[in-house]
Length: 619
Image (cartoon, rainbow, N blue to C red; front, side):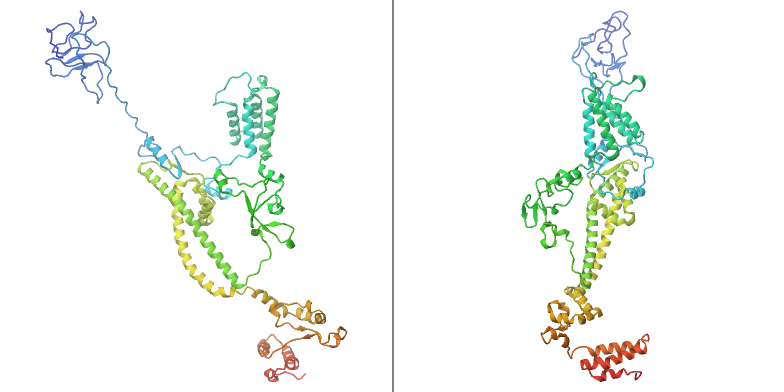
């Protein structure tokens, strides 16, 4: 719509072919007292009014007294046709500008800023641990360093350590306290309180103060007495009033007694499961000590089912998934020998009877087997820990590189492993690598996993390569020793045979045979027999079966052979007496006399054997 321009100087009308929107002065539509016309190309208006150039003017219209428009909003906005000298009945809304984004602050020690969205992305990207950007907690007073903690607490079972679980008594006590604070007779006229300030929260605050060492035992009991009776911290002096009923007072004193027991010995419910088992029918003895043939069923020759009233033993960290695969239905047993004990059942794994002694060759094989087992277990445990730490180490290295790339200070990103990441097998493998300092390294791993895990992983890799190389060399030695001893290990009776042979040649044994020769002749069943000495055992028998004539007949007959090593025995004894200077000449003389006058004629040996050892005297 083009509008024809009226004569110059008309009231309420701009010159230079410009139509004013909402123009005019204090008199309305161009009445007396109107301000002078604006410059050419300018439209008088407020912040929410716009103008449009009309007619032959070629300069854009401008708004007087309005702020400059945002960059993304045009200066002129097309409007519908408006009669000359009249303003629109309602303001036309203008496009609002987007507020400027707040720049992220640069943390202390950082060189660059990082948005919260990016930190949240980093936090969610952690797969094997939890990330936090919270300020690091300063060390507490008298807090132990890793070396002192390793000496004081020892080696943990899990990393991170599982939180201490409340005992049965503690759980029951807290439930009773919560139920006590919900009693209607404790607060009969009081309205519902704020959730942030309840008697139960005050009770927890008191426990925290006691745990931090701010309150002692007497002060804690005093605060809890007023809290349990009145539902709040008691007042002192004449303002102290007790409005609770007698029932609530009795319940409060019962809670105080229970709490006192918890502080002293953790209450009578601390070992509830163990006490329940002790009071059960089977007590604390193994189930194999009882005759359960009437209450149990034989599932297989080696397994019997548990009785229906048997109390099972459960470990502290058992979860629902663990209970799905654990055996609570049957146990391994074996029938005992009736002549060896009164127990009906026993475990074959607990056999502690006399074991056959191994010979020297078997002991060598057993030692080699133990060495092979230890080396294999060390390598496999190390490999198991290495496989577990490899993805964690890669994630830790990635996070550290990301922090350096983003210009963040060291220690701002805190990385904690997921619960039960490392168990006792992995912890033992890591501690073995570092020797005496293993427990201290474990404490460092618990305190700063982001830095320690990559270092430990590299150390495990080095040890894995080193131990596998050593195992190759040990395999050669083990193979040679096995081939040298495997044949001798097959003689399982050599030790017992050797012991019997040594015993049958002792002086006491020979003297006992001579003394009991008559008894052996009368009762041959009393003669000790063994396969090792059957060929060397003398024959105890009487020529005449008449016992009265036993005094006048021989009782023992010893078989001899020409193949007996008498010549070797003579050479050994002669060499001993002739070369050993400690043996006197009298002993040499006795040896020659005994051999020449007794042994040689008794066994029918040639006399020229002893001729090489002449007698030193004729006496």
